[in-house]
Image (cartoon, rainbow, N blue to C red; front, side, top):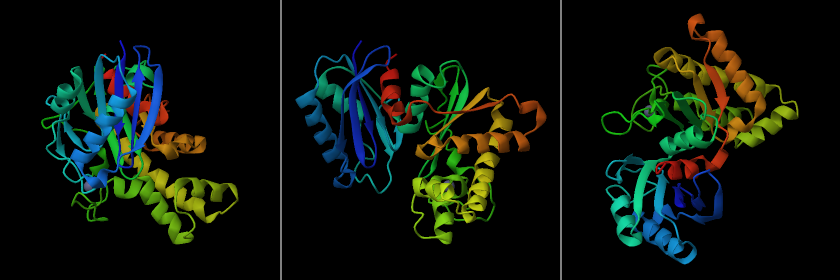
Length: 292
Ligand SMILES: [Zn+2]
């Protein structure tokens, strides 16, 4: 079965064909131009699909924003996607392409990608966390994503870990992602030297021997591990899969794993902290997996 997989992000949209083995072909990446609005984004995407793809039997869509995946509707989108909220992607794409369409939010889709084709293959249950601008999360239970009442469960980025702490975009104070996201790391590193504007530059600085960064990194790992320890105490999961560009750093996975094991209750120590294995293709493969 050939599935057209689409991964809609804030800056770009990835598109490819995926077969049942997870092999991808005809990969293409276009600017999402999200600021031009949801209707523009969708129409532009449809035109690209019409121009370059045929012969697919279903469409799977992974998208930024909160999604009612039963109905295929965007229930909430932030200010970077004006006019996206309320759009029924499922209905629009089914009408245009006359195939079955499924829609899921990007973090859940990435978790499904890891479940079917990546690091989660051997697990029926696991947690999946992504560290980037914020901290995203998904709960995989019995090989499916746990949704909660409104389909938005596992907003782990908004675990409140520091009561009265830094104000978060969500309106709460002291949320996990204000301390454990890559954004939070960069913010602390830039206090040392404004040149440390992203994760890659921070790790280059560490390689070049900037000792001041070591404390920053250790404090950040402590924040990450603290969140993972609480989640492990709640779910007692066999595995936690962590992803996001910065987690490509081998030393980081090792540091996080060691800190978690140091802080956790003894009886929970079987948890495996693993790196996501699909990189930026997780969303695409997860979008395809919606039909598998
Ligand atoms: Zn928050």
